[in-house]
Image 1 (cartoon, rainbow, N blue to C red):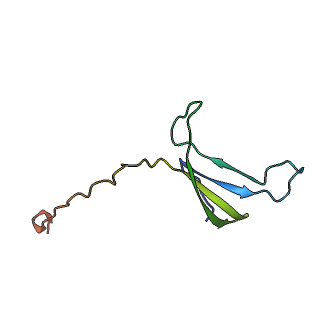
Image 2: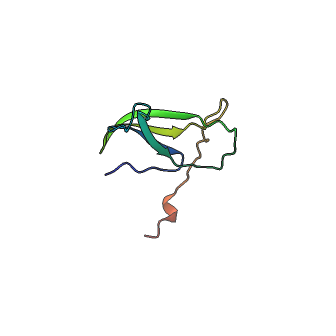
Image 3: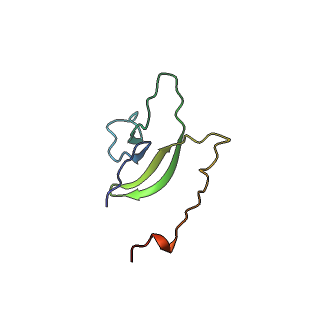
Length: 85
């Protein structure tokens, strides 16, 4: 299965055939997950992975802010009286 980009994620690949000395060493893309405006800082996190085209750096927008709490756990109630047999 090929790597599929999701909103807020992307990948950077090593460039194997650079056209000239000043060409970038890596190239890739990022799929936006929200609207950004000029001057916004987009934090990224990256992981080294193996893909169909060799080693890549998988990237994800890092929207975490100090004080962000994980979602609260919720209780699920069930009883056998709801079963129709």
